[in-house]
Image (cartoon, rainbow, N blue to C red):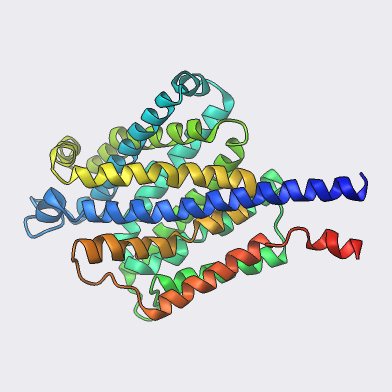
Length: 355
């Protein structure tokens, strides 16, 4: 390959990578939006008055922590799956969706949905309730897990520069989350362990699903993901947790309450935002690699608190959601970390060689 052909190839690769970075960044933005509306929905109506409020309706501590976490994930992901089905139907891809379910790539997406949905997502909500913001940087380890899996399983690039960038982003995520390990009690330690499980699940999902999206359309991929995640949460995870709690009849009561309460309007919005959050995550990972794609998506550790400040704090007037100056500075540090992982001058090596 001559120098001119090599230059053209590098430009094409750089353009493809930049598009992947754009997808990954927007996935983090939409993840922040869906987190904000999900948080708002789980504080309104039957959630805030009966389940998390003063009128607990006889729910045990286990049910409040784990069953409600699974319920919130189930309603959100099911609503997102409905939006995804509407999207593929409008695009005339509904038949492709059902055909893909029978293929090996479709099976891979189903497995990813089971790992990232009823397992990791429920663990995230439960850990957040138990430990608060202390678990945010631990969940953000999914970028590291995804990069390692992408490197060793799918032979994707990871070098010292990218490792430094990932570490910089993790430090920034810890600051943005307001992490303080000075007063860690037993409950918070358990939450950290649950958060680590969540990070591993999301890391596996991001790396494997990102590779799987190179084989199938990402709109089809996210439809599989959200439908499987929502249904498995409702039909498997929630009843299982209620059974462990010793109350097998609780699951239908919780589902009926959540789906018929007026707060469902916020889940309609959160589900709509969750669809591009995950589809852009898959697409970005498939275009720029798991390491860079998951770090860009990992900026949700800023976008989540930012949109919670806008939606929950400013819009709904709930106190305690304002960002501090330190968190804004940490957001800038995170941008620098993303730039370091992405190596934003991909033609540098070629230009240096030419010189």
